Image (cartoon, rainbow, N blue to C red):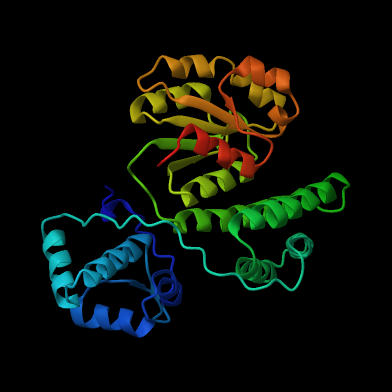
Length: 317
């Protein structure tokens, strides 16, 4: 089981966001804080509360105890006793709940073009509002495949044609990366089961696809660590030897990065647990011969195929 103490303590959620995530009314959250000292959220200068993922897990655990017939005072006393002994309750492992989506007023592709327009004009607030809209209308895979990816392709093409500066391209990719990281950190984190390491191959700096894939795997309930871009082979092998993952999933878009992975599958095969090398990306999509040389397991041509492949490799999490 996973201890609540392992969850993030970064204060990033408003009381409204916590209420939406847990189903607990804001007035109840305030009452539990005031009367029972159940939580101690951070405060902004304007007095607004900010909660952590750890706080949310405490609330989910509290709801489970209340459903079992305990009173809120009893639950608060249990938590206080555990914390006085430097212990945490076990987290309530639940699958992420998809809220019902509203009928979209326009196709997802239209939002991709709207987001592109906001990004190349550096309108961060407008881009954020567009993201809020698409989250009301579409599920996460659709947002990734039909909004984020196409908008970034449009940005890349505009840069290639000399219509925007490299600074604008960096702004756009940084904005999308930030949105993705917020989604990743908001998902329930498992610390049991088979560990999957996700990142990019050596000298590979295009990390959007790998971060999206890490989100989709965590959303499915897998135990996922996201390691980011440009992962050297020897460092990967050494880290795998220390944490014993079930597999290492890498994104590779260039021939140069793919070449640097030569021999990685063989190195992984001789360490404890024999973690499997799994990979995808534009370079291997277009080069079947390179896939045969590298070994390991090819994920497929898109995120959906990749998630299905992981389910085949690691069924019944």
